[in-house]
Length: 78
Image (cartoon, rainbow, N blue to C red):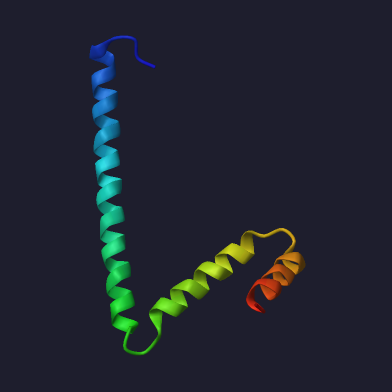
């Protein structure tokens, strides 16, 4: 880590510039994602599909899938 403000300033400026670029790219990707959902909204139930994708992503993270499935069965049989 730089020890003086003179040395630190360019590092901070570089970091903040790169961070701004990344944040802009994230905004652009989020806009494209929204446009994609809108494009398919007349052909798919996109809200339900997005929830299903989240459920699949959660299940992929689970170590004990059989136990997870059992819990889901119990919780949805009410």
